Length: 117
Image (cartoon, rainbow, N blue to C red; front, side, top):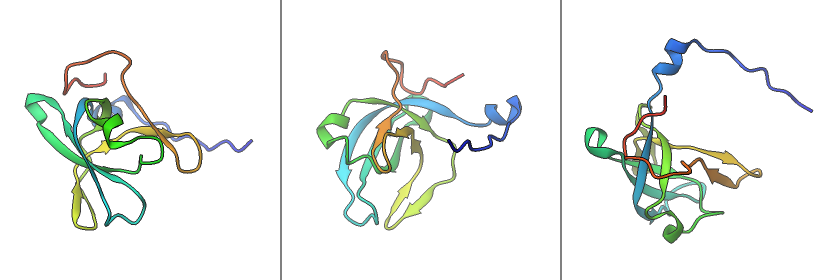
């Protein structure tokens, strides 16, 4: 078994990461992406608003599966240009296999924009 050495961070470093809950409100195909992906709009509440993300989650999720789904999102990364698209946040998930991503989602409804503490 390969164990990757984990680097510890301080509580102050962790507090810098803005992890919020949002609801997916729009999903579009992203044919320009190098790897199959969706362009997703996430409502992160009144204080943060709507942010866009590119997500390589097409193997396990359809566009209809994603609409209305709450997801856990990192909102304070620098925007990343992916082809003609600017990804403003990171929708979190876990690899189930080499390429299949399972979304990290809350198990109960939470107000959009709520922060992980």
